[in-house]
Amino acid sequence: MVSAHRVLIAKPGLDGHDRGAKVIVRALRDAGFEVLYTGIRQTPEMIARTALQEDVEAVGLSLLSGAHMTLCPKVVDLLKKEGLGSMLVFGGGIIPDEDVPALKKKGVSGVFGPGTPTEEIVNFLREHLDAPKAAKKPARARGAKR
Amino acid sequence: MRRGEPAAAARALSVVTEERPGHEELSRLLFSDHGRSHTVGLCGSPGSGKSSLINRLVAHFRKRGETVGVLAVDPTSAFTGGAFLGDRLRIQEHALDKGVFMRSLATRGMMGGLNSTIFAAIHVLEAYGVQRLIVETVGTGQDEVDVAEVVDTVVCVTAPYQGDEFQAMKAGTMEIGDVFAVNKADLPEVERTVAALKDALSLAPRKGGGWAPRVTPVSALSSKGVTELGNDIVEHHAHLEASGELRERRRRQLRRELSLVISRRLYRDALERVTEGHIDLLSANKADPQTLGGKLLAGKNRK
Image (cartoon, rainbow over all chains, first blue to last red):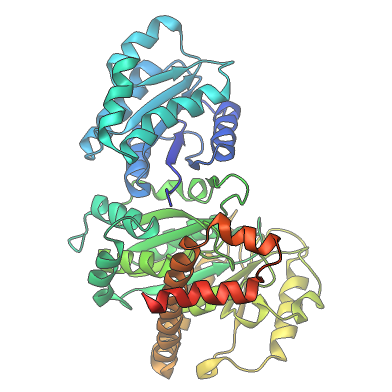
C-alpha cells in the first residue's frame, strides 16, 4: 500500500486572509493527500520546524501581504538549515508575474496565482511527489520531457 | 534519536506509521524504551476542544520543566484516502519550543479513534525521551473506548450543552475517564454539567487502585482551570504508581499491542490473497464469505 503524501500549507507573515489557503487544504484533502495547515501569522522558523516534525514532502506558502520576496526565500533557507534541502516548496496568493522567475530561482518550484484551477496544483504535486516514491529513473525521464 | 535529534524522531515516526520497509526492525529496536513516558489520552466529541486544551496543557507541563510529546490523530476520508490534519494549528504556539515534539497522524482506516500504528509511534517518542506524552484521539464520541488500552491516564473532554444527566448515565466513554475535563467553562451552563457528571460518577464503581474520577471545569479559551486539570493528571499518575495500578495498565497495553500486531499481520497477509476470482465465486454463489474467508486465513498456515 502506498501511503498518502503529506503536505503542509502555511501562512507566513502578518496577513490574516486564509480563504485561499483553506481552499487549497480542502482540494488536496479531496485529492487524497494528508494535509496539515499551520494557521495564520507564522514565522518562517515555525514553518520550517513544523515541516521537520511532521516529516512532510512539500510545503505550500500562501501570502497576500506582498512580503513574498522576503518570506518565501527565508522559509527555503531555513528548511535547508534543518536538513530539508530537497523539500518541494510552492507558493500562491497575490504574487505579481514579474516576481515569479526570481522566486523560482530562490527555490520556490511552483507559483500559483488567484484563479488557478485546484487540479493544476494537485497535478503539480503528484508530478513532483509520485516519482521519487516509485523508481528514480522514470522521474528523471519525465522531467527531461517537460 | 535517543540523543534527542528531532529530525531522527520525525523520520522514525514516518517509517513506523507508514509501515515503510524496515519498520518491523525499527519497532523491535525501539521497544526496549517502552513505558518510559507517562502517556495521557484525550478523548471527546468533535469540537469539544481537545486540541485547544492540549495547547494549554503543554504550556502547563513545560512550566513544570517537563518535556512533552503530542500525537494527534485525525480522520482519514473513507472516500478519497485524504485527510485534513487540523489539530496542529491549535498547538502552533509551541512550534519553536525544543522541549515539545508534536506529530499529526491520520487514522488510515482504523476504527475506535486511534491509528493501528499508535503503539509504535508512542515507542518512538519514548525513545526520543519525552516525559509526558499526550495522545489525542479523533473525536468519535460515545463509544471511543480503545484509548483506555493504549494510555496510562484517560482524560475525557466534554463541554456544556453536550447532554444532560441521562447522557452521563450511558455506557462508553463515561466508563473510561480517569479525569473529566468540562471545557468551555466560560459558558454559563458549566456548573450544571459538572454536577451531572459528578452525580453519574458517584454511582459508578471505583476504578482500579481505588481512584475516584475527577471532574474539573476548565476553559481552553481563558486558561482558567488548566492548572487544576494539569494537577489532576499528575496526581493520577502518582496514584497509578503508588497503587500498583500502573503495572496492571501497562500489562493491558502490552496485551493490546500484541493483539494489534497479530491482527494487522493476519489481516494484511490474508487480504493480499484476495483476488477478483474469489469475488467471482461469491457472486456466482459457488462459495460463501465465511468458508472462503476461513480458507484464505488458513492459507497462511500451509505456507
